[in-house]
Amino acid sequence: MPKPDPYDTQSSIALMRQSIDYKHWYDREKVELKVISNTMYVSAMNPTAGSFYVNPRLMRHFFILMISLPDNISLLRIYKTFCSNHFKNFNKSVADEAETICKNALILHIEVCNKFKKTAACFH
Image (cartoon, rainbow, N blue to C red):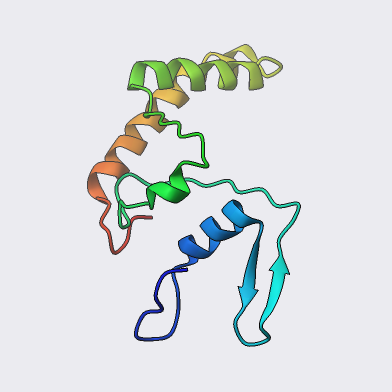
């Protein structure tokens, strides 16, 4: 385990890495072995906020996959497909508006993203 910080705590990432590597950790107060079993770790990272550093000794246990957001033309096609399917049992006049609804929703999304910029302090 890493050296405790001034507040006598240790990195949760280091604790997670130890449980993945050794399948146990020690309770320092009771001086006994704590066995960890039947666990699964799934993680996600935000590329625009956070510390941007993950210990390579922990990262080696994960399959790392990066997917960027599709462009607006692809998003329109995806959303139009779902929306058209949803509206197929409606009146024809309503069903014909699926593309317009999707275009306007994407325009609104772009405006919201541009107005409310992400920051490390408040990235939601």
